[in-house]
Image (tube, rainbow, N blue to C red):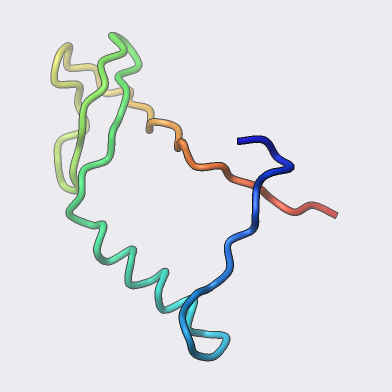
Length: 79
C-alpha cells in the first residue's frame, strides 16, 4: 500500500469524544491472553510468547528477543 492510498481510520461507533478511547481500552484487555511473536537475537527463530512466559528462546535458550515488526502501516503526523 502506498502512502498516497492510505486513509486515516475514523471511529465507526456512536457516542461522544470518549467513545473511541473506551473501544481501544477494551481491545487491550481482550489481547492479554493472546501470544505475541518474538524473534531470537541469536538463532533467529520465530516463536510465540504469552504474558508470564519465561523470556527465553525455545531453541537455543538465548534471552535476547525482538518483537516482530507490525505489518500494519503506521503513520505519524508531524509539523
